Length: 162
Image (cartoon, rainbow, N blue to C red; front, side):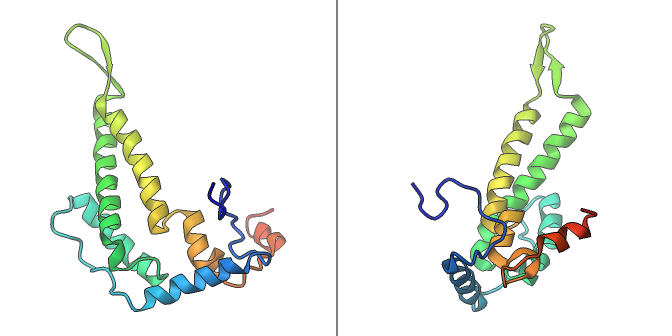
């Protein structure tokens, strides 16, 4: 069993006062990434057009919060490619439907449905690896950029009318 997470989802409070090792780990990751080369602003030429668009929009945002370096390039390429494949499959479903009738009159599932399912799972996994999803992002930089770990829940709820 993994003692760090023990099968539980990460705590969104990020740095729990009872666990100072969280803050130390967070600080160590930030320091280790400071000297690494940044990702190229230009997407690799072999990416699909939609993947290139996503690359161009993600790289500046991820670098502004220190989430990625050149070490993450392969994962980001895969993420962008999976996103482009996902869009193609969604367009196919929009055009042809989720099911189609074969030459014998039997209903068959559109293969694009499986592609959407597979791509969404892969995107979720790669998103966690890159720190794009909320939980990973908050663990790496602190919720709302607040590195103190002290979040006033009542104040945050008021922002959303709560």
